[in-house]
Image (cartoon, rainbow, N blue to C red):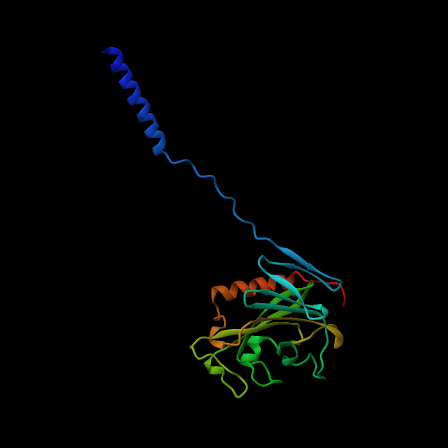
Length: 221
């Protein structure tokens, strides 16, 4: 009888220990945070460091021009650009026409930029005289050549890099080709769907496009 009692107590103690161990959740192994992956686009004309998620593709047959895309955002860089007009610094249409978001807003070309602009200094290829100009349009900007959103929002449709002369073409030697052209646009022609001014997404994407442009190393000038 005594042996049976001792055996029964031992079984109960073992079962209790097993239940206690099962009740304790194992400590999960922490998953390492993913590091954003950068890549490099390089040819005989340029070298650019791409932010995570951006894809670079040569623009047509021009090795000096590249479209860098993420979602609907397009960063265009041409390190050997030349203008067709005789206007000093070039025309807006020469750098913007063909970009889907610009074609939707500026309905007649050549025309000056529609809407309002904001600018801020930036450094491109070691040159601190550059600035990024952002263009926005709202219902208040309606003109014969300017289409506007109808949803009550102020939306972004284009940005470009300029210099101290406020030119559309950034010449390496004053008014002597070739020149640098850098633009940013949106791959849509539905103005109501354009990014809203000041939105978190737009601010992030403009910052990423500017960061890529700032990484530009120009090999031929």
